[in-house]
Image (cartoon, rainbow, N blue to C red):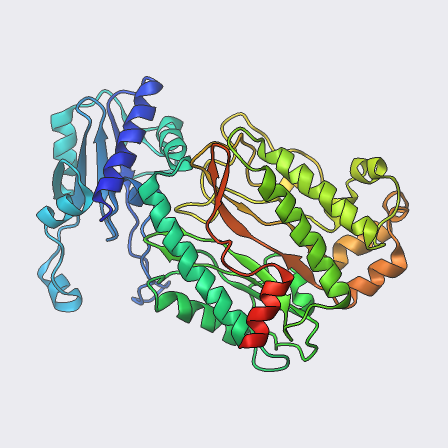
Amino acid sequence: MYASIAAGNRAKTFRNLREVGAVGVAYLKGGVQTERKWTDVEGPFRQESNFFYLTGVQVPGCHLLLDLASGHSHLFIPNYGADYTLWCGQPPTLDEMKTASGVEHASTVDNLRGVLEKLSPKTIHIIDGETELDALGSSATMTAITEARVIKSEPELKLMREAARISGEAHIALMKAVRPGVGSERQLHALMEYECFRQGGRFQAYTPIVAAGRNGAILHYVNNDGPITTNGADLLLVDAACEFECYAADITRTYPIGGKFEGDWKTTYEICLAMQKVVLAELKDGVEWEDMHRLAERVAAQGLLAAGLIKGSMEDIMTNHIPALFFPHGLGHLIGLDVHDVGGYPKGVDRIAEPGIKYLRMRRTLRAGMVVTVEPGIYFVDQVLDEALADAKLRQYLDEETVQRFRSTVGGVRIEDDVVILPDGIENLTDFVPKEISDIEAVMTSS
């Protein structure tokens, strides 16, 4: 299935290498089977993303040469001994691997150096950090692959739609399952993985976050070992998604454990939802991603002012980065074969040294074919708020009584969708997962 996709990916990579004047061959080493330290217990194998992108091969111990002179690709697979068949079954043949990857040449790894001698390349380009060959580490190889991966082809998008579908349906299953005071975060984590696995999403794209109540204030809360709180108004923040054929989804939904939004929890949710909806309406080819983060901050400021959490003029609030006290991370990132996909910061592009936006995982002009996450959040993080309230310059913009009221019960809200950038808008891959208050309540009360 992936052979034609891999062939297109190699063609893009060859083109990118030639455009910078690269000659010789490019070498990539695939992932290897790992074992738990001091044991022979094998971990699950997941192919290294760049290698999968260029080959579609999902077995360990392989190597790849891209010959820039001929435009041909050479795949090398392990020499499988008799013991392999005994323990693991019949190994793949050279013909099977050649067909599965669409390469022109396939051989066993013991022939790698012989093929290199025959090709006699002027230069062997490797990704920086590889040590398999005595070769020239070259940023050209990584840059060529990265820039190819940034723009997704339609067949790649088809795989990402499936990852989104499986993950989104799993989110809906959690919405229907949660009850106040019943079970634990860990049980819901298990349900997420089960729902994905049974539909073909074997691996989670990242460690799931299942955060009940105040745990939602921890941005990357992955312990998932707390109880489901008894207060039905408390929020459950679930940030989880699977891979499908190595392509990731990344979805976050936040909803009341009891199925009904109310009070300060509802207010916080409405601010976050407004942030996301305004940004989604602006996305298209040619938009600067950092401008979208600043737009989200401005909408956050408007909501925080209306809620009585902050005070002052809009100009002073923005100049002093007050929204970052409640929205302390970046708006989103590229997504593809990795959940935080490559290409966020091209060579020569630096991070912006300001609160909140300094954690933005991408500074690029959006182009059609990119896939990005849009994940604003509003949180009440004790450390952040304590430091702000202790700083006279920042404290003047906070209504301390209201802040203390919210932080005593509300952990955090994040809403995240995966969107494809189009020439004049977006395709939202995860919009079917309920996020409007009325839609969430309808799903939860009907279960």
